[in-house]
Length: 241
Image 1 (cartoon, helix red, strand yellow):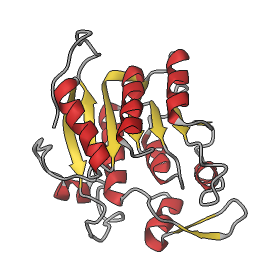
Image 2 (image 1 turned 180 degrees about the horizontal axis):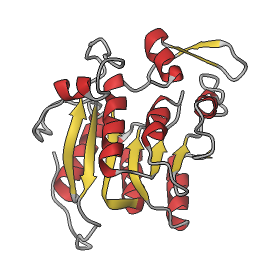
Image 3 (image 1 turned 90 degrees about the horizontal axis):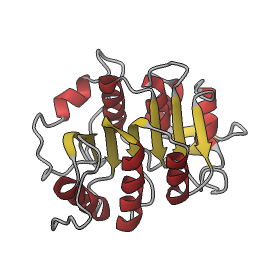
Image 4 (image 1 turned 30 degrees about the horizontal axis):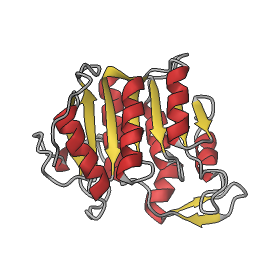
């Protein structure tokens, strides 16, 4: 496993840009990292986009498994990365130290500005991870623009789907958009010792995830495969709970 990720999960710390030890909180769970890498490997993804960077944990999981070709790119945006005292560029520094600096394009803007710019540049992605501002309207806007650049057959993971606002977005996607739920992870309150160094990196995930598509179950993160482009009528609407 990436030694920086290992430190974050083992010690709940990482290093600042100037080498000081910094406490880490709020990062994705190990199970979410496994799901990210499982999805990327499944679709042989080369290009990805991520909303939210923080300490770079999810970005390192993503970059580690992207298919390495001349087209490989990971677009990540976070307006707080460089200016918030909690982060201070740590996420970007962790990516560089992990050897992913050449494939990462960091956009120092909020997602509602950065994602439309990617669309204007005709960027298309195979995989997306949304973990930004967790109000319903912001999360919906993130999904709307991610959908416009995500290829058919690509996979999008929504983080924190046990939060009310994000769960509401899940209901909208299930009822109004052409996506199919594939897998989910336990909420982060789920306590289980990591088996990161034993056997397949996906063994723990396979033992925990539901084999069905029960979206009524509570998940920490949920993966959705894009089935088709948006072909709804201009006045389409289905009520969602």
